[in-house]
Image (tube, rainbow, N blue to C red; front, side, top):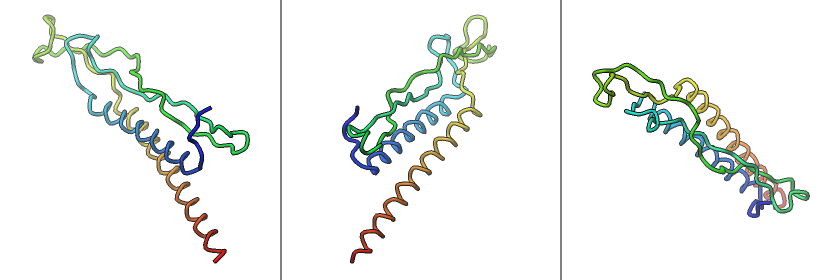
Length: 139
């Protein structure tokens, strides 16, 4: 059980933070798409955040849980060996190792992270608005 999840606003903030990490890994992947290396071992590998569910201490009473980023890992994908004899990092046979980043996959990942971020932000904004209206009803 994770303490510190004491309100829906905290849940929303942590979910927004997790989606920002996701967007940052996508940005890093896109920035490194097409990069090359002289060896397969040093070629850039795409990154992905690993999410975990964190529960409130009083989850049985409140039902609150959220998503946290447990870490960021490199995907186990083999870089492509590409013939580019004019490249300064080419090996003696004229090959370089290109980062295995799929721009299409990253764009889908970015759109999904953006939608999740927007949905969470809208839910928190709606809750805040409803709480303000409720508070003003008693005046």
